[in-house]
Image 1 (cartoon, rainbow, N blue to C red):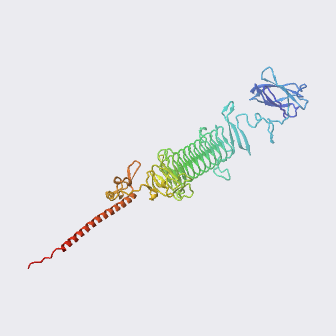
Image 2 (image 1 turned 90 degrees about the vertical axis):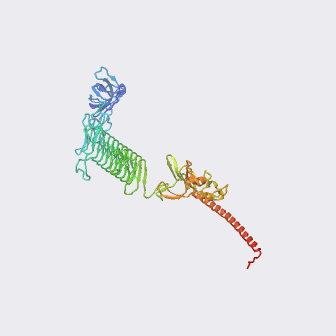
Image 3 (image 1 turned 90 degrees about the horizontal axis):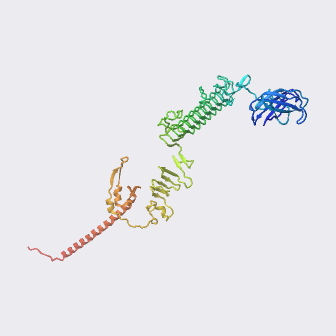
Length: 597
């Protein structure tokens, strides 16, 4: 039986316990003592006086003084024999003084003793109530470990670190699971929550059995077996804070590294992580592998999302998944099947994904993106900052059913395709079917605009002249109807212009192919309307389609000239015939003549 009574000095709480009924001779006293508003520490004398009522009457027995009671952080407990008291209810008055002082300080009021089950000497197998965790606990008060065994085998051991702060150990090690599990000597703050088995054929259902091990400060192994948190050398701090959640044969060997689970995975770089899978290795600082098999994240900050035999060896590189991919360049990306971004000399370990891939420069093909379809051969990058796609079924943008190698469908009113070079748009394909290329790009009509000039255009509604004109007031090849024309006049380029044209044969400087035609500069000397010029004003080409009008005009000119010449000849012939007729008539009028015998 226990009797509890509050005690106060300044602000003080204590408890008094009795073994047996309230009138028993032996009492167990425990409580809290504050001195000047703060938890007391040191030795104090306590004086107890028992009364039969809360406020009146004489004491039931002479006062008893408990001398030299040790108080730590305000907590104390003591055992005391009191004379028998003839009362079922007992109230106590309490006084306290510092050990060795002359006067006691009385605590105002009396507190009733309350019968309680005895706590602090042993724990009941059915549980205890009313315990104070500050002074009632299962454990040790010296530096020796606390051990729990079942079937005679150690299942849990807890021990404090040798390092202390303010007189107490700063942390503790918790070693659970198999009796073969081990936290290396000198390691602090480590935990093995469970799992582990002795080495050898100890488990009837699994192979490669070994215990779990923590070799560095603050390491953690959650379960499984053959798992290691730490790098196993003698330094104890160079791979601190490593974590293995479970699985088998996993190792977190870098500082702050972690392996969540799976089989035979390695997180070796500082802050690296492997989520699961089999045979994966995150050796780069901050490298991450989510899962899969036989993947390697060897570049700092690299990541492999999954798949098999992928390697992210470039700094901040990514393998999205798939099979046998290599993201070897700094900031590169690879996905699909056998997509390869070439690594550099500063890239991490090649793994299976980058094995045999050519090494270029220091950082490899930086910033390159490679995605490859399921074809069973390597799809290799050839430079930095490339975006490479291999898709035998075609690439669809805005469509899920590509009908070409590249099929682009523009949504709504946005252009279907825009290509910029050096920040300037050079190609624009609109949703109305128009295409504009070259310089002076503008939203194209329903046709083709080259360097700002409409070259081909489809007709709109009849009479809609704006659809058939460009900015230079040139008529596009869409129509020759008079509805779109004004200032119509006869062409003044006739036979003389055609005769001035110099047909030539030549070879192109680019490729050396033989060709024939005209020299654009010579044609421009005849008429500017027969040539084209570039943005710099230089003559570029001959508008051969316009030569048809010149040739027609030349034929007409030739016909006119031929008709005039014919008429002249005819007039001359008629005059000659008239002259001959006159001569004949004159001859007929001459007198007849005879010859002499």
